[in-house]
Length: 345
Image (cartoon, one colour):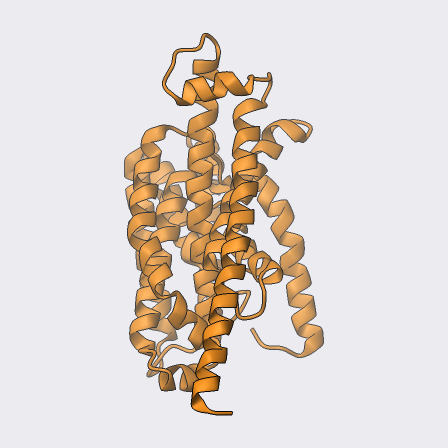
């Protein structure tokens, strides 16, 4: 086969992968929009589609303006933006470290933000934006600590995961101790935050999420091709021109930024970052990028999980309870499967 024929085949393969990626993204976007329509129309009462559209257009509709505009719409927007952040950040981290266990909520990044938030609520008696700011700062600090402890002339994925799991276990112990010592008035607020919830969501909460997605999300998408190349191994990726150290640093910074900001706004919604990437990989074709599909899946998980927790289950549950019920069995299955296969983390 001549070099010209090989080049043509590679170009055709790239176009084919691009078309499949576009179709998958559009299908997932359609599912997300259908979920958005469901959450805006159906709750304790049915709001006609025309009334929903009029509210979205800025018209004053008696009853619907409050129900849709003040209650359902902010909740849906925050759910989608937080889900995009968790899904994109989780998939990028798993792709970088080449392990489905390498999720920010497994390797300790979310635990750093959670411990900081509980400390702020229980010990410092802080509320509101101050808690979120401290959660972001400590999430970034935890990621730096994990990275430094895992450094041995470079950062191996397995070592970073194990260090992260150890740091996460330590922080969970600290959180448990603070909760045991917490006064009753702050205990409920801390537990609500730790569960992960979009209760009380407000439209201003969307601003930090949008900024985070605009900055860190763009960085991750720009690194998508490099992350795909690194799936072949470091040596082959370097031979293809990937700057490994730069790609790792940019990806880790962007992942931590996305996850820390989302966690600061809605709490550590369990297993969304962990589940989104593997689900995207299952439904995507081999060699197809998974970052955008994983982000859309994360958004759908949070949006529909919150709706299920509010209206489809007996009683009312925060979205973190629903996603935790979905993610915990998969985590157990994944560990058992890897153990039987003799695989590594």
